Length: 113
Length: 113
Image 1: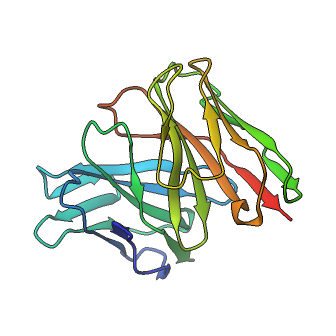
Image 2 (image 1 turned 45 degrees about the horizontal axis):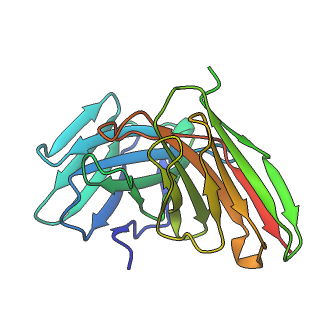
């Protein structure tokens, strides 16, 4: 039973346009959410996070939106750049949990020049 | 700063062979984790450690053992490798229970024939 789901395995976007990556979760105990970015042959790197007390968090071109009632979060990248092409993982946890993150299956984003 | 270092980067085993994957971090982090990444399944937690001398099971612990004899090192062992253990293995660490962001190594590609 996947507690964190990314239903789109891949997404292609034109350079300069908006990329929207989606993530759904089922565990109501999750209260902290993160996005990681992964390039081939590298480990995932932290991108942006959001606590359940907020519904939006922004960092430069990246914005994460959280809809707690729908148990849904999304990552917006504006404007998209070719260097953003990577696999994006959504992750969730309960704050302070030693067991750490539950990851989604990832979305491969391709930004076309 | 080296961060999280994994060795080896690549390994091919025959069914039934054993091996140990080494993870070393130089950030004085208390918490360390072993994940495996498989296509379409994201990252799944194998084992984790909340401090030197401690280990605990994650989501998919069967067929693996771990040890944390020194704070900076977290070893993942396969006693009798099986083809189902063909995967990319990632080690990660974080400072404390309150710090949610994980730092990942670059991964070990393991093939079991």
